[in-house]
Length: 85
Image 1 (tube, rainbow, N blue to C red):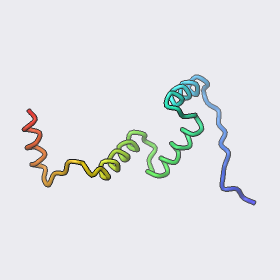
Image 2: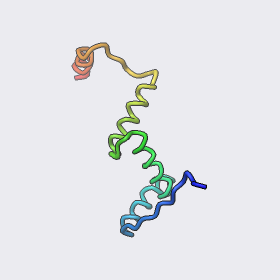
Image 3: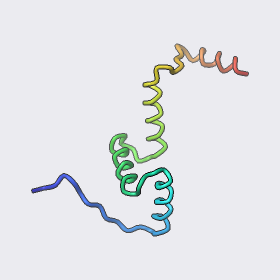
Image 4: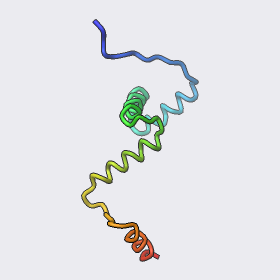
């Protein structure tokens, strides 16, 4: 019977691993869970760039925000920016 799961094993620099573990554990995560979520994001967004993934998530959140500011033209944006000066 073929399983739909795979076991991953790799070797890496201990200092890099420890630094990564320290960073993700501060956020209440663990290394395995963080790596699995990262891999899922790469597949979902078809891009490995973390900044791009965050930008896409920000745009999706903004699109779902019922209180977002909406402009009908670029000139409206410029008018508002000029009013802030």
